[in-house]
Image 1 (spheres, one colour):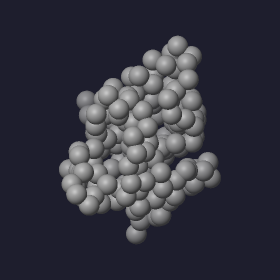
Image 2 (cartoon, one colour):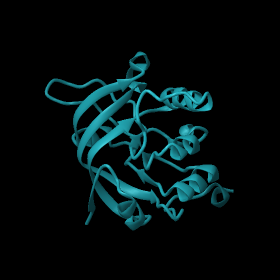
Image 3 (cartoon, one colour):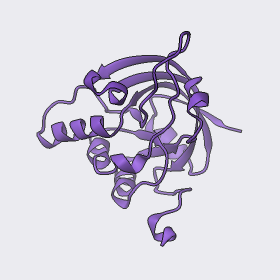
Image 4 (tube, one colour):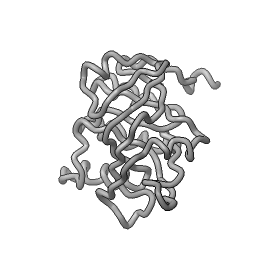
Length: 180
């Protein structure tokens, strides 16, 4: 049975989540992929303001397809999270509390998650059409010129995910050292 959790995440909820738990997420989350992460990272490096407040937020690594009539969004499956790893510790230091994607994270990201008390959820790859049914509303927040890679705000209800890496660094994922 999946645990229901609500966004924004509190520190207490994050600490209570354990690697391997199935969750159904309801609430408001940001989206973003490589290009948006790069822009946010560059602003952080210049000590400039970000176009969205990421403090306390969860970000879903997705580039949603256009919506069909009567739907908030088209297929919206997760992208490979490792593509954001270079930028992630800086975002976690700025208050990002959670990430949703697919695949492994590097040691720097996991160390930053432990330091900042964050969680990484895995969404089911290959289930983009199914996941899109959990997305009830979408709003463009920043970098509209990036098209599907812009930063959006999704409102989701019962978004299915698994706690892949909890705030203590426990993981259900195979690590790089286990693949060699």
